[in-house]
Length: 239
Image 1: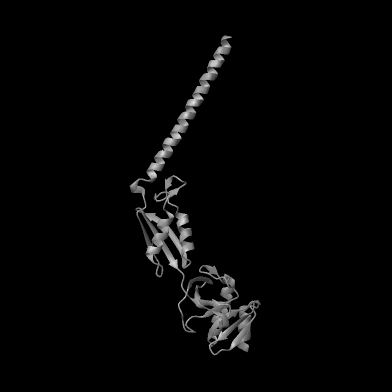
Image 2: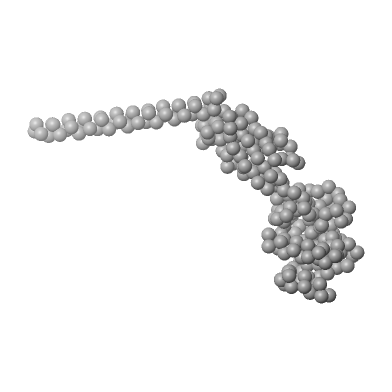
């Protein structure tokens, strides 16, 4: 009987001890959480400014607006997103890339409570002007050297920029109009024709996957993009 009472008291003591540990753990968790939440709003840890570098065409104030909008509010519903230790850096980069298709690269960092954004902007090497010269869009889109349409272009006289045409009809800033290989092959062809003393001004990719290059004098040269570019140039040279 005494052993039974002793075992009951031991069990009761252990249960009370477990309850106390649980209570202390829960209280401790909320104390720590509350402390961390409070620290996230301390002024000395808050982002105060945004600086941009590398932007030539894009306005700095527009970059700042996107960044400040991204870090507004709370992270995980409780922490300040402006805290320099936990601000959403990846989301800042993602939003900048989505908002400004002109950006080729975006690098974001923090120093002395200032978010520093460093970008490189795509350069308008070519124009994409719709499906074909007879149905050209106005304005055209700038294409960079990788075949990405990143911005509407001002009006230019023929010959100022080399023009590309293709069957796509839903091109918007940020669209990949041509694959890297396709664009590289076409530029190799164009540069090769230039090297032979001719003056190509545009290339049209048709809906049947054929291509034709138009010279400044209106002459058209039809090529098969499935053929090797070097072999095509050799044939053109022989002709």
